[in-house]
Image (cartoon, rainbow, N blue to C red):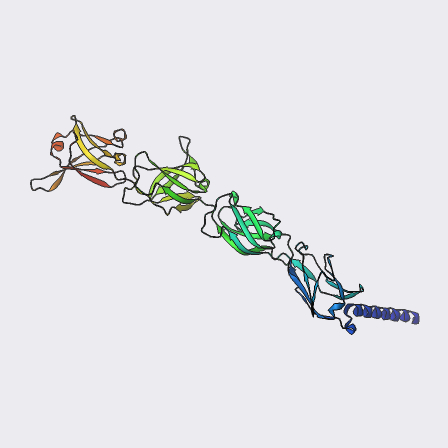
Length: 405
């Protein structure tokens, strides 16, 4: 029993001696060496880690958790401070102890757990305007710090339409990617990998709202009013492949658009151009019309406007006993419905009265320069002093009687 107690006592004494040796080799305060402060414990690539204390001229090397060893000459000794710059390729998230060794190789001091985090920061995005339209496939450049650790760009983050675009770069300060068609419209965030358990891998710095929806640059022509007859306006912009297109009965790729509030049909030319046929019922000048296209329920309306020439009647005449013909320009915009031609006369007191109206003209009787009505009331045709003509857009125009030769 006494021998057992002796063995236990000897073991305890050995442990105490060993602990004392470790303490002495760790701290060496009796030789004037002391570390008062160290940090940061969570550092980033390219940053400085500092050791403050006394007797720092006794330091021969510093060993980091990844095995990097900084010998004298590889760290800066500035009075009561040693500064070490974390290499740009230091492994992320690896953690462990930082050990300070003396010039004789003995361990002087060790830290608590230290690690290097990814710590991405974004300082700029080009294009930078949230309202600037972007084309599918266009380059977007992110500038910042520690961008080598960006593994993905996340579009529409957190939504059902989230799309992850893997990216890579050899430049810590710049990252460029192309806008994918799968991205849709929304925002993007940067996701950093590899991750540390306590490191938020999704960075919300430098969020950018981007538009891959269609955008309109110009409507041509937009200086002079355009004809309503057999005329197409040209619309330029981008991402027109994202407009709601369908195949019509003739096999053309078309889309329903608005000219002001009037429905028209657009024809696909390219991702940056489309044409729109002016419908007969488009409002006439001086009304200014915008162009509105549709993309998955979203309306995109031009800031540019244009106008449509109003029909002009030059003269009218009776043709035989069954027809009345007006001649002019842009007359395809005249309505073909019954009652669209009204004859105005004068009563005995000189006031205007309606003498009669013509039945439907029929589409085959309307051309850009001539409209023919079937009308056989000779007394009306002899007595009228002016006519009123209804346009397809519902407006009326008046013309004082001038007989065609």
